[in-house]
Image 1 (cartoon, each protein chain N blue to C red):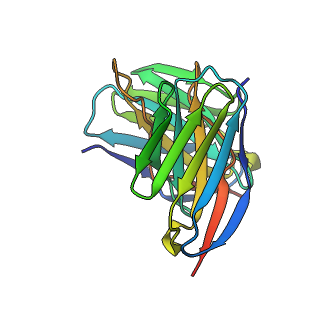
Image 2: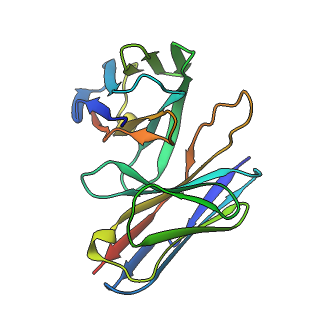
Length: 110
Length: 115
């Protein structure tokens, strides 16, 4: 059974800092990995999707990498801003629909 | 462009009462549809998914059920709510086509409180 772990559970950084969020998964037989953002009381917003054949994807200040063989993904946020404060979730898709981690709650302090 | 709607946005129901949550998708055809629950302090739990009209797969045995009466409509129901049914219910969609990403997109959610 696929399990997804996100470390740390919470993170607080000063504005302008570059940061990395980590995601690990137990079964490397995945089709893709997706990173989401969730603001309090809101639905999930898709940030980046990496197919199993890809190593990384970039969107603006966000860069996600995937090392399928080691079961790891990272989300890199450059020059963090207070508006980046949210919970970030990663999810992997294998033979079953998405399996989610519990998320990392990020606070960017002005 | 595609949009996904959920209603109601919030709901407070007594224990033992029925439930009906609705999700509709616009701007796409034959989507895969999903119901998730997010309970306080817990991750997202997949409840049901559907790859077509009348086709429902259940991931978690419970007192909830799902139906897909139309291509872009997904309904979550219960005959008698339990306290443990409280949570944030999210609907999502994706499209699986040859060479596509199968990226999932989520609705705004329904906050359900069972008292």
